[in-house]
Length: 329
Image (cartoon, rainbow, N blue to C red; front, side, top):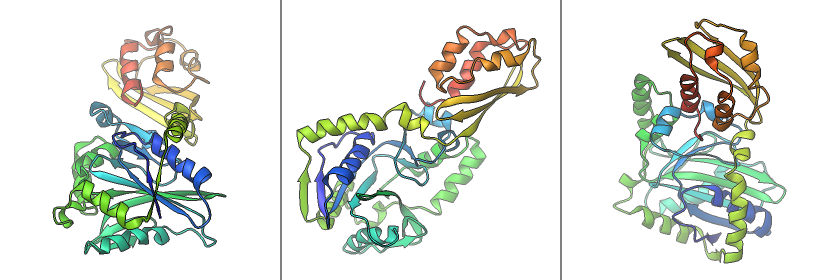
């Protein structure tokens, strides 16, 4: 395989790396070639077909300033910190049906040199002694196949669980115990090999050639990266879904049900045990066909007052409820 030297170390957002994968797949890749590179990110990454609001513990993520991203491949949500290594393999498509195993075996063979016996498990995982250390995702097109995944060197498992599960402490506690029984880190099995040493070992043993990204390509990739950083990619690619925001205030409990399609509010309904003063349809209609983000909600509430419709309610409470469920405010 050909090792890509991207000279982008220290950039812990995935946008550049998604652009690099796309560039290799659709511009560099030739017959009988395979490319490999490693990268690090900090944050949560959901698959392209997932609904963001269903995947993360918003209050915890916001409180701890954990970033959130969407990737162009399918699969489930993952948490990554700097003690986790991401890797990418880009190659021509096989004439056979795709199997993660065909590509992950390259990884397992290299780890045998360290006397570590990784095993392929399930659809897309690598395990060590029956515990998961790597999850992977892929996409393919007419030009080739991209597969990327995680390698848990010394990942903070507790933060991972708290980021991806409900905020109820009992559930979190059980979740941490449950996940720790099913996943493990590589560090205890590597005889004091550092994270950087592991990365260098993988790169030198998986590849036999180097391609260095030049300054012109870096500029191109930075432009491409803007798409993956956009709200369009993050939110509008979501399937149509219903989001429910719920909280009790001193004026009553309110539940807001929103039907979202391509980032646009298709339906907006208020339910609860509050006392309404006027027809709620008038207030609800103000949100229909508007973009679903915090700035839009804030703008609407700058002219519309919820206390005209619900006894004792106020816009401050309503905004706080929305802000609680938005990553980007």
